[in-house]
Amino acid sequence: MLSAPAFAHKIIGIANDDTMTLLMDRKPLKIRLANIDAPEKAQPYGNRSRESLSDMCWGKKAHYEPQSIDRYGKMVAIVICDGVEANREQVKQGMAWVYPKYNKGRILPAIQEHAFNDRRGLWADPDPMPPWELLEAAGLA
Image (cartoon, rainbow, N blue to C red; front, top):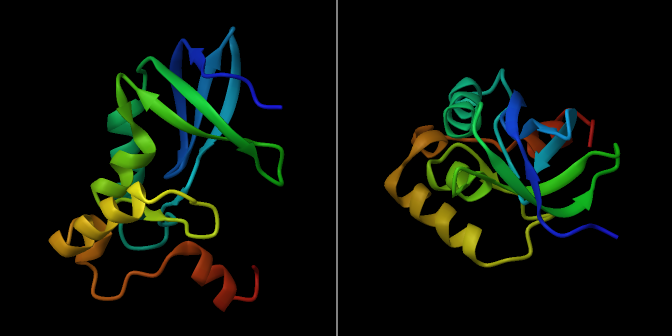
């Protein structure tokens, strides 16, 4: 069973565009952002997405709302950095896709549609490809 929202002292690492490390009780805790997937480093906007998440959360106090545990044993959560929900903000800024396989809500797709219509972030690319489609095309998914 997942616990109630937990508080972290601060974000101490941004591993990539949708994974971060929180310092909690002097121990690192890796968390993957729930409901979204961000471009990989080698993809267009991969570095910008990571920078966006870092600017939003690096060194800031945060709390998380656990959603699940992934197949690698990593916590999957909604993360709020200094009052800003990182998952939602990454989609709003066009720095991540809503991951339809895992997202069950209606809010993130509506936010993504606005980012798409405004051509924000990765939506400025003429043919943005979500990472899960890249993996499927490479036969890795």
